[in-house]
Length: 193
Image (cartoon, rainbow, N blue to C red; front, side, top):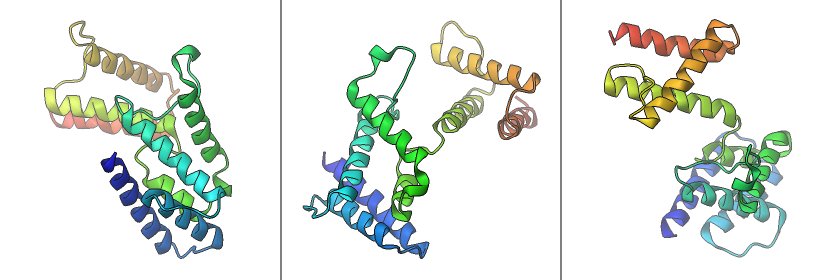
């Protein structure tokens, strides 16, 4: 618990520093920063709105830090029964932050930017994480992941990579993803793997 409090304090300090550097010192952001500081340091808060937001973020990050592996809460999945109400609520909270980003104060945006749990585009982040897993595998093993029945993780990576290559071939991959995949494959060829 003490580590979580220290992490929350460090994230708050980092977000406050970045927010102040933007010179966007509006009154709403100042209230949000003060409320976030109060929640991070366990100090009673006079106003509720910003403090509720800060508490919601702390709860969201708490869920993330205790899930294994660190996984952002989801609001929906094919098997809805596998989601607890708590996870669904956290997932909906995150969706609202993304949807109403323009309504967030500058401090709130900075605080979400430094959060290890929050992603503005979770689908793209997940895709980039998968590509990074393949890159680490390639660097470690000297070969691309294969459909190995003995290693389920390698098997999952190989299936994902094959789907991406198929989408690239069919022209269904976004230009940014196509460029990232091409750079990954070029690295493979250049390294002589």
